[in-house]
Amino acid sequence: MVTSRIDTDILILGSGGAGLFAALHAHQAAPELSITVAVKGLLGKCGCTRMVQGGYNVALAKGDSIERHFMDTIEGGKWLPDQDLAWQLVTLAVERIRELENELGCFFDRNPDGSVHQKAFAGQTFDRTVHKGDLTGIEIINRLAEQVWARNIARLEEHRAVELIRTKEGNALSGVLFVDIRTGEYVFVRAKAVLLATGGGPTMYKYHTPSGDKSCDGLAMAWRAGLGLRDMEMVQFHPTGLLAGAHTRMTGTVLEEGLRGAGGYLLDGARERFMTRYDPKAERATRDVVSRAMLSEIRKGKTTPHGGLYISMAHLGPERVAKEFKGMVKRCADCGFDLAGGLVEVVPTAHYMMGGVEFAADCRTQLPGLFVAGEDSGGVHGANRLGGNGVANSTVFGAVAGDSMAAWVRREGALREPDGAAIESAVASCETPFKNRPAKSNLESLREKLFETMWEKVGIIRDGAGLEQARRELGSLDDELERFALDGTNRAFNLSWHDWMNLKNLVAVSRVVTAAAIARQDSRGAHFRSDFPETGPLEESAYTSIRFDDVAMKPVKFTRVRPGQTLLRDAT
Ligand SMILES: Cc1cc2nc3c(=O)[nH]c(=O)nc-3n(C[C@H](O)[C@H](O)[C@H](O)COP(=O)(O)OP(=O)(O)OC[C@H]3O[C@@H](n4cnc5c(N)ncnc54)[C@H](O)[C@@H]3O)c2cc1C
Image 1: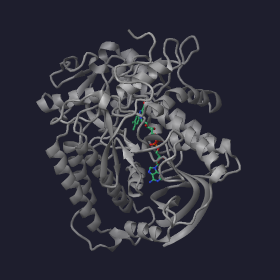
Image 2: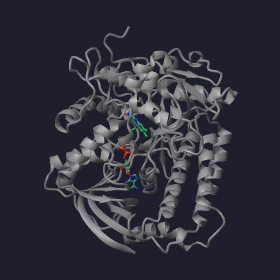
Image 3: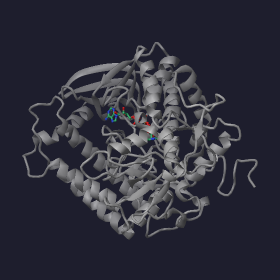
Image 4: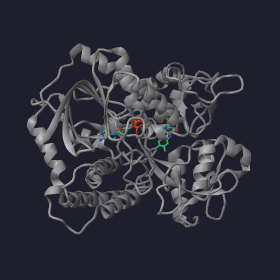
């Protein structure tokens, strides 16, 4: 059934900030190696890095420091981040932003004195978010894509990775099985090193922000391959998703953090501010705190016409808002809202997965030959990601992965024979819906069930009974998908088939999220259990680690700073 086979030295899955940076760095480090970027969409046109609005956290300004950025990241992450990975994030972000500006040609906004403008993002003690207006991701991805196009880097566009294939002996990765979306044929790519950079993305919730091409494929493949996944219960909800009715895909899309950072107010349906009752930082509290407060207000019932709350910016001056948040103002206007001078309906929306594949500082995973970077990886952010640390994470670790894959391939890389039976079994799994007898269910109703289960029972506020119920519902959904039938006569751009595969992966990862949420019997950052509302002693912090169905709690190593301490010299 596999109709073509390709060999390459380095194979990169995904063309977001992590994938493209990895390609450029690997090429620069070892130009003699063949590099292939394989991507579900079109290179430069898909994934979430392109959608980044607010910007990129980096300690550049006088008065700020990498220690301050580090402490904000650790405290924001509620002491769960892997401290060495977080340190690498904050130190290398400085290098990466220089590279983006001076080598790759990004233009970021500047102050009148020529220095880079850095804006306020919620949850941070310093204004350190570098940006280009409120469309920062387009600037970054366009420049990265141009540089990749200009080099001898091969592309497999509209190729969907479906399974990681081990060697016959099972002790290393051989390559990746794909479906060529344009023809529906199976392609096997053998590679000396593979980077998983498919960008996580919690699109299993009713309201969500990530791009439509993301369905947790990388995480599902890693889980099926037996890799350890950490912090999977930590799903970040962004407080301000646009709420414009069920008829538009704009509902759930994000209105950026900078709105609250600049001083925006959240109001209930009666137009009263409420955040001051929940946190002294009010609207500028971290995302977890604000999202939870919003859900509590929504549950009290004082809501807007679509069942959400309002964001109000008018008190900052409509002209200023229109100038500073041009993209947001336009997006709201497209949905009939006046962001600069009026009120916009908002709802918390699933935004980012802090959890992901466990990895080492050089982006190696437990499976020789497999590397990971970006939102597919876990450990950098702990229980909560700071706004602006996401794109920093994908670019920093993408570059690290590119450098280390190049070194690894030069040192010990070899093309390894795949386990033929594993390829056959992966193909058979993909073929499942073509072998089933037609039944009455449709994919849309299965998707709605998934959305509802995850939103209501594994969402912003959870409890043991709801999580157990979700576990059962997800099991039934998976059974229904296994029995689902599709017409396989025409495989080219068979979007129903891809939708089926998307749902299979989303359900698989939802089950992992649920299992981790059941195991964590405390509340911390993005994970709030109403039956275990306390955080417990920070000194005893432990993270969840899942391999297949086994969940373990592993102690966090405080390698740089312990709870109650700080790296800031001027702290009182
Ligand atoms: C609307 C929005 C706004 C955001 N704003 C900010 C912000 O202001 N600041 C910030 O720091 N972070 C922000 N983030 C988060 C940030 O975008 C992500 O953390 C980061 O871009 C992830 O980068 P990545 O390279 O890991 O993944 P992505 O950029 O998402 O790229 C993933 C790639 O993998 C491909 N892919 C997926 N599945 C497969 C498959 N099966 N086979 C092959 N390819 C596949 C996709 O097509 C895509 O090319 C925002 C996110 C969203 C959704």
